[in-house]
Image (cartoon, rainbow, N blue to C red; front, top):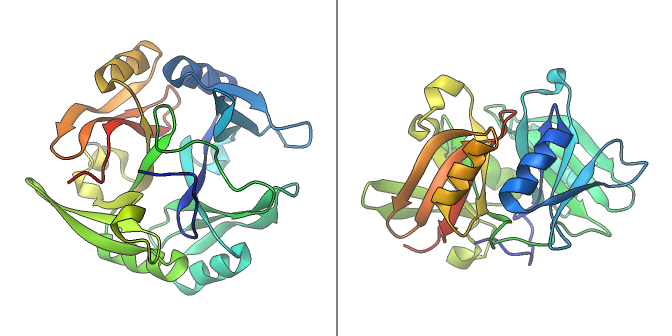
Length: 264
């Protein structure tokens, strides 16, 4: 599971881009208990989601030309400019160049060789989200990609990730961890896009964040009641827990999980 003891290469921030930030805030408040508030008058409309007073995510209104509604996962970088350059050298791209964020840190949005965007965050005053690996907070991330080996090589060269094979009854899962952290550092996985039940329909690889819940079935029912959609119904996975893949009313994809993906 994720923690807030961030190391280089680990997820340390997440935010949602949506055409209706007020509507999205109402959805996630009713689903997870998050409260949304502006990050300040000079934040350009960006706001913060809090759970019991701790920051769990960010969010902002985005225009159609900025891409479809989506969650963006950010990874800790010791040097955002160097990481952006590493992405270019690995034949990725830098849709949003490194930028200082009001003294809080330095961020950029990169994209891998398949065009999947992800963020990097170089901490200054703010290290990252304030809750992780618990109910109502980010607990796992997955990259759905057309080429797992290529994605692994890209992220190894850019963020230093290491991969390992985890065997389940129905196949092998490629888990990822920051350099040198081993099994205890696992925070996510690389998944063939063909294994996404809606992969062919969606037509695009993507990052999928998982949020912890007390009861997966209840969370799914509540999401549907609030206007969200179900991409994969609640499913029990031996050694993992019970999970479901969802989307909010505006199409941003996420998953819910009761369990720990490291338990094998």
